[in-house]
Length: 329
Image (cartoon, rainbow, N blue to C red; front, side, top):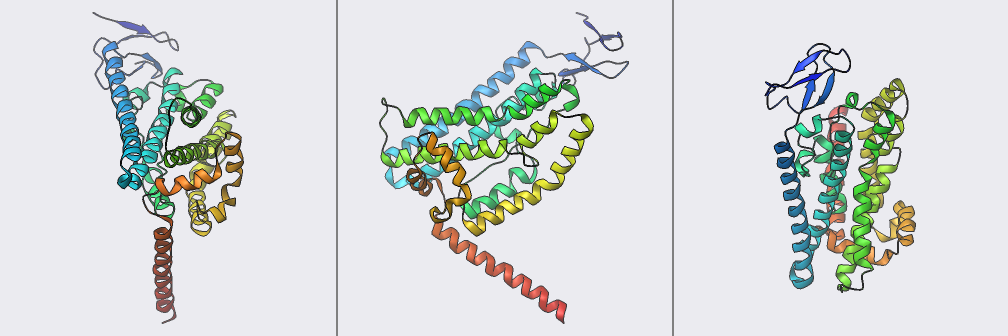
């Protein structure tokens, strides 16, 4: 059946009956090239929903099975504890990026549908150094994975500044949900957990608080920075994007240096995150249990990490000395 849409910008008539599979997510006017609507068959909605449910169940199964192994198989505690916290981090980051994409889709950017950002698939959100190299380096110095993610949104398809703001800030709903669920489990009178698993829940909640607060800070490249500049004019917003692209990696390098110098989860040097522990205490999270849980959440223990840092610095110093000797000669 022939179907036509009238462009609201130039009032031209567009026939979309012959639209291709790749093009049908977004319809553009043939006359003025403006995006004028959504052409997504109901079957495609169902297909994406099935992807979402499948990925959701995969995360839940990983978390549930690792928790069961942690409680019932003591010899697997280090591996299962790491998988538990890692699965929660992966799930929360995937849901974080999903919320960005979902609100972008609601407010008019249908391209996120075509890119598969509504599937809750962590691999769809992994892009560049932020998702691979930087988390790996932080893991080597802290023993905990902090995976990064991103969704690419066509800002021009979202018309109002307040909608841009909501899209940029929506990701934190994920961390709020996870903190809320973990706190319910910690304070539950129905379920009884071992002291070790309680400490694992405490550190999991703390890591979600860390991600939440980090994203709210006005740091270039993070959600807080993007949300602030999205409320300003287009020219100022573009300046914010330029600074974001220029400063994000130097800031991440500085963070990694701080982790190396002060230790991310060294109890004696925990002043680095002292404000987070104050907030955690307001949520009835115990600082001592957080540090006890770290040992289960880390795949590499602190002593091994310290040895690695020492060997790494010896390697760096040798390189510097070699370059210096070559320059002198």
